[in-house]
Image 1 (cartoon, one colour):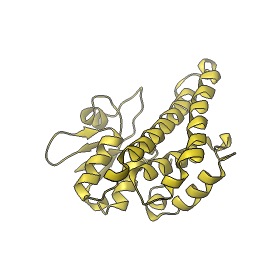
Image 2 (tube, rainbow, N blue to C red):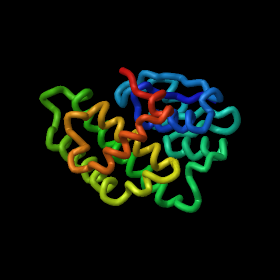
Image 3 (cartoon, one colour):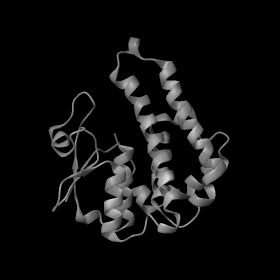
Image 4 (cartoon, rainbow, N blue to C red):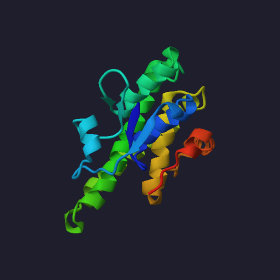
Length: 201
């Protein structure tokens, strides 16, 4: 199988962390693509008609895409139980929350990187951060006990989302007022899978 990837995408990192945690890293060829919304790489376009990464080209069956779909597939392939039935809806909700954080953070980055400086709408950028801040506050208030439990895909996704905030938007300071979440992330980020998948420009 081939995983169409990027070195900095938090959505790709979710998949890479899962691969490390489940011992599947050597089962895939990682194909790194330089792509953007304005200039989709050919290998990305051929794998995903939406032009987004990650995409998983399987040995059998059609290519699948969207990080949540790929993670469910790889979890099932390894029978690793990262989507445990007993807390499935909580795990899926955390993963969706993480993806929402990452989507907003990527849009903030694109607003500054892809628009001319005079066209950047800072109020729109701030509105994206408001979404992130609301989600992080909710995680700190309601979800830390789950995050401290047995490893699941919700934890992996949240870990990758918070790491991306540090990587791209550290000056915004997501930790302020979120001490419990900060403490959890400090431990989670030391996992071998997280250390092995740190983004690089």
